[in-house]
Every structure is written in C-alpha cells, then in structure tokens.
Amino acid sequence: MNNRPSVEVCFTPNLFPLHMDNAEFVVVIDVLRATSAICTAFHNGIDKVIPVSTVEEALEYKKKGYLVAAERKGQIVPGFEFGNSPYSYMNKNLKGQTLVITTTNGTKAFHTASQAKEVIIGSLLNLDAVSSFLKKQNKNVLLLASGWQNKFCLEDTICAGAIADQLLSSGDFVCDQDSSIAAKYLYLSAKENYLGYLKSSSHRRRLKKLNLNEDIKYCLTPNQTDVVPIRENNYLINSK
Ligand code: MLT
Image (cartoon, rainbow, N blue to C red; front, side):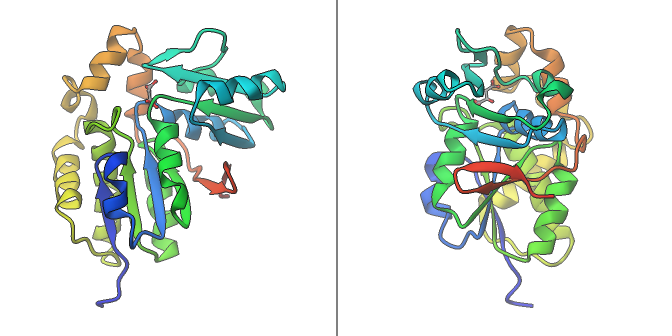
C-alpha cells in the first residue's frame, strides 16, 4: 500500500523545480487555450506538434514551409496564419501535417518540463483519456499548470484537480502536497458549472474581451477527445 505512486499539483512553471524531484510523468496543462488547441489538432489528424518557446524560432520553421501557429497575449502574432484557437484545428485538410506552435504560457510550460522523464499534454478536452492513461502507467505524476506569466490560473488548477481526483479516487495513487489538496477542492467546487465558476477568472476575462467566448466554452467542455499527446524527443505525438 505504501508504495503507491503519487499525484501532485504544481501551480505555476516557476514552482516546477520545487516539485519535480519524484515526478516520472509530467502533465502540462493550459486549458485556455494552448493544450486544448494541441489536443484538438491531434483529434483532427495532425501527426506531430513541435512546441517552440519563441516567435523567432516559429518564424524559422515558417520559412522552411511548416504549418506554424504563434500566439501572444491571446492574439495571433502578425504574419502568422494560426494562433491558439482550437477551432482553427477543426480542419480535416490539416490531416497528417506537422504543426509548430508557440504560445504565451503553454509552450513555455512544456519547455519548463524538459527535464522530466515523460511529458504528456492535458486539458479538460481529454480529461478522462489522460486519467486512464496515467492509471495504466502506475508512475509518480506531476500536474503542471501553465498559469499566466508564472501567475496562478484557476482553470489550469481546476483541470489539474480533476485529474488528481480521478487518480486518487481509484485508490491507486496518494498525494501529499497542499497544492494537490487545494486543486482537488477547487475542482470539486467548480465541476457542476466550469463556465460560471470561472466567470471572473483573469484569462476568461482577457479572452472574452477578444471576443473568444466560443473558444472558452469549447475548452471548458470535458471529454471531447481521447487523444493523449506525449513527448518524443522535442516534439509531441498522439500516444495511441
Ligand atoms: C497561452 O499559452 O498562454 C494561452 O494558450 C494563451 C491563449 O489563450 O491564447
């Protein structure tokens, strides 16, 4: 019983070094919207996703003819065709392609986790799929919330709490950190109405100002896909 794996929550990327020691699987979460966009891209047949940290790197890939997405502060970076809206990836013409993506926080969190043994991508869209994937691995899990410029974000923490709740309810995982307990309680208070619960959250307000309400609603709708993007070298593939 004592050697059950752990599931813990890290609230922001800058806290990652404090939490990473035991982690075998890191789940990068950016509900609004980077990891939701990545899951949607795989669900619609994208083959490979290369997350890059800077717009300059993204531009280099663009010059080489790649399909490239670049977002900063919620908006598509001028000169790029794609940003972070999951709706952009609901396009069967993108099937089989490689997507290069840079975003304000989500792709940075992915790189923060670069030292982790294994990295997967989580969102509310693939909530159950991620939880069942992790249950099968039987390894220590760290749920890394991308936050906003290293500040705490409610939606990522709620998603982390939802995954933690599923793993803990299985009886096969334990948690020790107060961040994990807090994330779980936030999820339990939010789960009946994510949209309402997040009404005044900072990134929801930011995206609403940009008329991205449909994106918000979609990203807050659990279990739209069973993809589980997993890191392989410096890119992501669908684990299935
Ligand atoms: C990010 O990576 O910071 C977010 O996905 C921002 C956004 O919603 O466009």
